[in-house]
Figure (tube, rainbow over the protein chains, first blue to last red):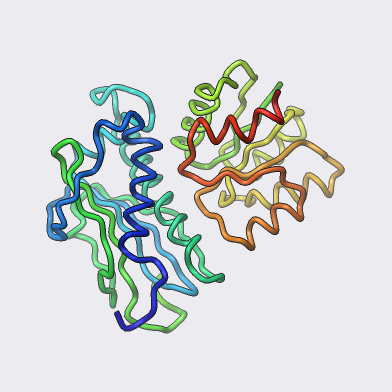
Length: 161
Length: 120
């Protein structure tokens, strides 16, 4: 790591665990089981950008099925009642929650973007001049889910939008 | 009591409502605003007893809503429920007259701890 980041992998794992405890697995029966496979496939993803004292992106990616289950858990409905809008909103909120928690650990002067949701694999996203610096990769009820941090290589404050 | 929930995320409004119910505050009258401006208008027109507001919202941010309410002489009990929390934000919130600062993700226990003294 060339630039100092104050949020490491275990911090990220702790935030993710809180999301599971609060919303996705409140009963504690279906945790995210780590696979440590940063190349695991995804079908949908969402992201928020942070600009300022640290510049980069927080990306939440999963299979469509895991996203539908997350939407059902967030909205207290059955998986087969979940609409595409529900999936989009919940994916956006997941990126927003993790991004907000990451921002809280950064030095003052960081701005968080509104979430972007893309119903296509994370591999279709291209964040120019970034490198993945940290991530939590796992399976939730057999379905792939990952949360990763991408840091802008440039120290230029203009950074990515 | 009437509680106004202000958040631009439909999902988050729903989760706040559900968590209020889980924490035993579901009998209160719960109303919702989808952006800061709407929250400001509803805080004036609906006379809620308590406002739970997100920080980052379109039109007006939560802190702007709180400041403008106070500037207009409105003393409604007001606090933040937000995924962003920095010491500066907490300071600004407190200085503007916020009663609490709840960070997402939150639990029903956290809601109970914060709201029991306020809602009785």
